[in-house]
View 1 (spheres, rainbow, N blue to C red):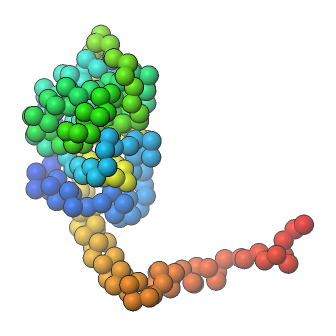
View 2 (cartoon, rainbow, N blue to C red):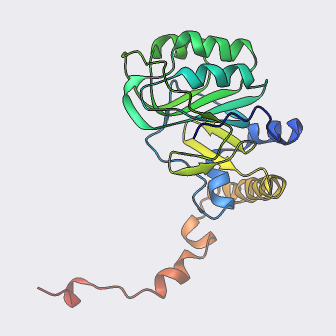
View 3 (cartoon, rainbow, N blue to C red):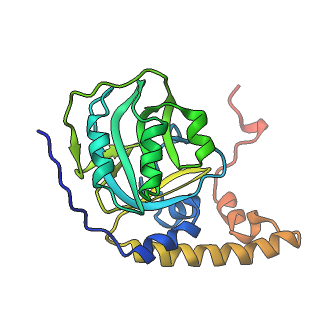
Length: 229
């Protein structure tokens, strides 16, 4: 079954832009590591990447990019294309010209659970692209695919309208419902880390500041004399 849903219920642009200042690590921390961080196999096309935008989701057949071309025409400024290709890396589904089209139309970035190509050109244009690899093989154009359906990318379920952020460490997804709460908790976490950093710079240990000494004491420690030979 192939579905094309042209409309996306997008969060407020100001809310999305506020996440531009939030590291992916902080989102992971404040969401309790509940599976909103994409796996480490999805890497940016260049160092220093910063991305935040609204998800426009794409389900593409492995090795085919026809539906990706269609999705680019439906995306709006500030959107991020989230493309599920089942992790297929034997074809470069997206290249420099497609990314140029995305950039020219104001898209915030592109994430593909599969391979892309023209890696040097994409890096030089500094358009945020994440993928599972690079392959020069060109794609087919014969499968209609689906747009704005729930997809699984990097081990995370993504719905159209979710907020996606990316940096050098990786990618995190913030569901549209509850995004304001995540942002508030993220700012609290950043403020708390600033305070801790000041103490660490004065010579204090995270081990003591975070109460890890108590955790350590409650563990059963096996010394050499207690080891089973």
